[in-house]
Image (cartoon, rainbow, N blue to C red; front, side, top):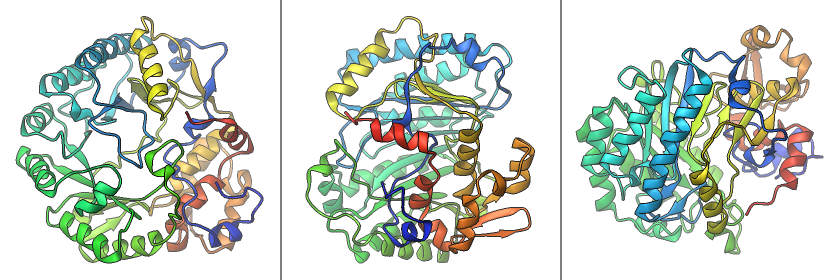
Length: 441
């Protein structure tokens, strides 16, 4: 993480790749909740009329070299069976805590790789969402993540038959040598068959994930991946800069990873805009015909109900989850504790948000899109002015990273491409201190 004592101008002039802030506070700021509150108390005063449901599947067929997700590769069938039983047990307990007033605006299934589960297991998981949690799968926008290795026609047919509208496939690169370099030895024939299965199943939204900055990647090979992705006319593309994080396989390599990432980002941004895509954030691009109507899938919203080990739940004043780890033995230990939990009635690990943290979180959620931050919405929510509460926002404008027009604060192109520097800049001293004290295991 960049030096916290540096000025904003100095941060903007340094690496654009400090840290990806996809949620605030960061999971490494979480810790034991003592005393652990009952779920009924956590959710009692929350608005539960438009919740998001997230179900986490902590299994993959392989561990990619860049991956720091809470997941374990190739679990025994016995563990998968126990996961299904525990997930339903947890869902019943959470539904009880939420009561009859809960309703859902969207749902997502992620991981890991949810489609490591076979078709009957996926059907059972969706039954939990619908029959236990009360999600109307046919009417509620739903998204499921998949991989080329597990995206079979049978699995896709099950998901589409239950109303899932969006499939996100992690391709990362259409250049086989680049995939192999990050311990993902997939073949393009397999990738094409997987995407074809998605298209044949008739999902309204196909998202393809790609990574730039991979070992030995060049601008020419990056363009080849982009052009190959465009041949499938995806409704969305997510482009991620490579991050090498502690305890991952790539972290053992001795090299600088800053090299071409910014120029590759610029190339992709310009290419996709010319191809009819609208930029939604630093990472997300949507077809212009879709951008005005499709929901942006984001786990930043308040009112997130998480099921499964590794899933986080968000209320306005408390974020909670199981513990998080990356190393194989630590993941297995946490997973084992979750599988054995007979109660699921308390929030034991998390972070309580005071007023200042809630304000920072709202900014982290709203600022890093091309739509920008609505100052009137901020005023309506908090009863105060953003530029008074967080005067540091004025520095964004002075540094040329943002502009204010009317009641909207928007990032400039400079600010947008440096989202991963500006995100950590928003961290409070309390969050930063807890993150520095956290040891990834």
